[in-house]
Length: 327
Image (tube, rainbow, N blue to C red):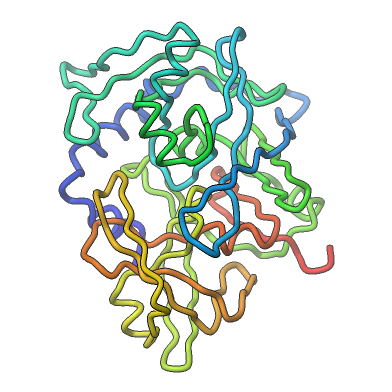
């Protein structure tokens, strides 16, 4: 399944998504991008904040977040979520920062989210360590919803609408992340990080706000399949469509989760699969999830796979790399 197909699954929300993508394309949601300096790329390496949460019992990988400076006067802890196509901030954090929510209109049309006119706030300056991320609009959601969605006491989330301007290298063992602007790292820069080559091509869709997807192989005793999965640093669990689970002959483990979010309520069952492989990296005997009720939620490659090795997501090059074994 290509990412275009993933996007088409969201037919009930396409108008809102297309409008949000238009804002990104016009530079309205995200703006103030850096100019490439003659001396090379702008970069910053900062600690990862690891937030423990129990979305799936027995899946212990945490949510990853970073501290961001906001408008030069405040700061907050924000999840970094490649699987989200928009960024959000809690109403309480916006109030503490003196940011006043209001609707955002473009060509006379209001931005819609969750079937309602979205409330947004404008951040003029966003910094990650010494790296200027530029300005952007955040969608404002209640603190209760943000905490229920993200776990812990995070102030919000940075999604692919902003992350897609950079390259991101997650070193989970060292609990740090490096970002570069501009992205599209050279072959020598990739080799210098000790990453496995040749990597794998990312699929990015402008009408999905540049959320990345990658081809993932699943192998079980009954069958082997390849599925296009959203690379999702915001999901603890790798989750397949039920049709793929049927093809692979997955036997449910008896563990079931009821979830809620942008796609409404849905149910995830867990099962063990022989192997999961992407970009030369393989995990054996992995417990994954699959949607056991109808949902528009696309399949995701989650942190249960991603966090077992260092990973580079280079949006400019449209490439994903994993750390080479023993490097």
